[in-house]
Length: 241
Ligand SMILES: C[S@@+](CC[C@H](N)C(=O)[O-])C[C@H]1O[C@@H](n2cnc3c(N)ncnc32)[C@H](O)[C@@H]1O
Image (cartoon, rainbow, N blue to C red; front, side):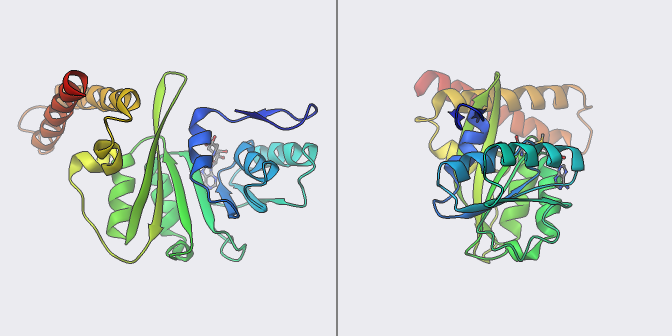
């Protein structure tokens, strides 16, 4: 997705476009780990967000983000902040927090260090690169409801994007739902091709995991059960959907 004027052309791939699609019109965006700031540039330049904070823990990416923001003439609407995770961002009036392109464990740790996100008015849009199951388990145990799930394919890879909002009710989910996302399983017919990419990604992961383990390893039985469930779901999706 290309945006910007003839002087400042930026593009949003399917992964970031899926994140953008979950941000509410009118939201004040906190984009944590913004890197190039493409997401806030897109959402603010399109008038979807009136203002945004683009933050990163590294000065290099943030300097590049600032240059892009200045070139787009949006310095009055997009603030750049150098900080670790959400530290120091609780007073920015953020309503939609995006954390994309990081591992699920790092996203979990960033959220755990920022109690202000436990607020029903704050939406989290999260795109973990791995450990999706650990991130979903954390969210459910900490009282967040996963309200939306999206899948996006980019450069031959499949990515999960989820939206979560805190309501204080703790929940549990089975291992397969934590891995794949309950909504993706439920809507697998309409998301067939992307869902199959997701299934095959995890089937490979769990095949390697179980092949590399002795059957008496303490994690073998659970990993094998997940692998068997994934292969059954692949067969069902290929043959019957
Ligand atoms: C792979 S890039 C993802 C950029 C963008 N969010 C995206 O999804 O395309 C990860 C970015 O997160 C930043 N980052 C890593 N750990 C961070 C942390 N603890 N707090 C803030 N930013 C962090 C990195 O410096 C890097 O710019």
